[in-house]
Image (cartoon, rainbow, N blue to C red):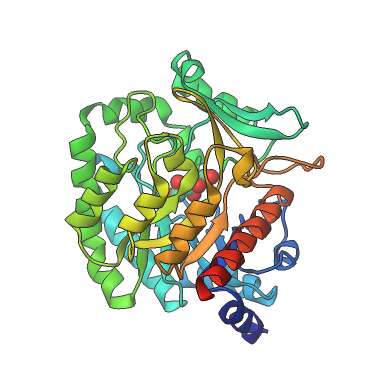
Length: 370
Ligand code: DNO
């Protein structure tokens, strides 16, 4: 069974098309459905139910991997092993959490997993002002409006977003943080962008010997949106800041998850140029489109270039030209065809996205081979 996907992958594309999967307990989408998306060879998953800072056991990792492989897919990477806030804040207790993180990395490596996506955003992961904005075609999308966000008390917003998620978990919004929003805001008052950057570098330098030993690729996710929200510091949001992180720990294992939707929230980010500049350090791609509506305002869109503001052809061409071999996944989809699923993570629009991105890739590949 395993021979099937590797042959398919080699023969078809070099990059791996994958889908994010939240596990049979939380996801409405099944592995069997993902397996039927043409060209989709694997899933990106995580151990839900673990808290940031906890050690992941080898047994639990193995069980997750076996379940995925039994469905004819590979576990192409982890999104995410979340970072405890004490590491981001730089508290003395970070030492224990870093030691635990290293143990998790070792356990992952022993199960053959070499890609770990994570983020370094304080308190919140991604932020949106609307989880189901209706479009004229009847589909719904996630949307962001800075003016709306500015009127909101973050503590209340967090709880409201959770209540409006239709009973689904919000990816990246760990319940642990949800309970501590107010307290975390207080603690982060002493952390500016420089301090956050130094704390990231401290963390990276501590884990890199393990990553080098086992060949683990750490892939930091971009901040979403690509600017400061609720006055919290953000440091992974433009070419210069990302380059600084890569230069501070200049080894391959310190890499990025290039997320077009996060970077694309700021129209000043030239994404194809960034892809070319970060060649060799992009271990994972999140590819999606969005529509700029005005300063600090955007709606997510279908993946198709003409449906949004990003040129997906130019983005995939840049990935092709740097020789991207790591996993790429379609990112948030619209909610279409009456599907009820986790906001941004239904099956239908992400499957359309994967197919479209694979089509672009095939065309780009063949035009280069002529
Ligand atoms: C949102 C996702 C993020 C991402 C984390 C990585 O849909 O792209 O939640 O997984 O930021 O740690």
